[in-house]
Length: 238
Ligand code: GLP
Image (cartoon, rainbow, N blue to C red; front, top):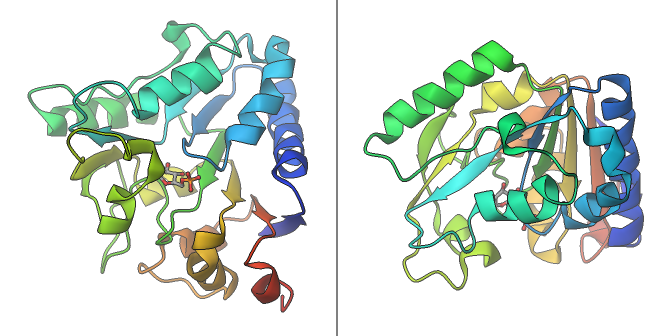
């Protein structure tokens, strides 16, 4: 894992954007898996200045909340606002996760079959959950390899994306840990002082299902970009 530290979210976003641009210049129809949340926003803002390189790129979301009463706060509207619109990626090159269906199991199967056919992911952009989750692969005794419905932990239910939601989602649809680790390249963005414990666990180098992000140590092409904040004191020991 290549670890880099940044003083500002702007410089971190810029460096992450350079890594993404390298990838889409190398493979114009690259399949990108795009996390939502605060951490990748500066990255997506930088990418918007380089939309011409995304003419053939393909997008698969990392996860989606289940049970929101409107699209507000959904990963779909985030991806639309921060990725599809600014990068001018047509809907035909975006696999949307439809959580408003009768059978969520069937939706997971559809997503997984699409990924098996169109994948693997060329570049997976991830954020670190407060509890060490990746997507909605939550800390547990066992992790799920493929696309599945996850029961959300209270930490995830407290995420700012759904702060204004009328009904709090209890579940989420997410790619599995094996799908993530099958990506050819991974960028993990770590920002937020509230992630000190998860960052500490990740940087310990020990792999545990109690901190799903630690499984990224099993991958040989991960760039981990960390915004120094209150984690600074800890981070300096490494
Ligand atoms: C959320 C999302 C993840 C996201 C993570 C970190 O729950 N499901 O896809 O990467 O938590 O979010 P943030 O960057 O806002 O801290």
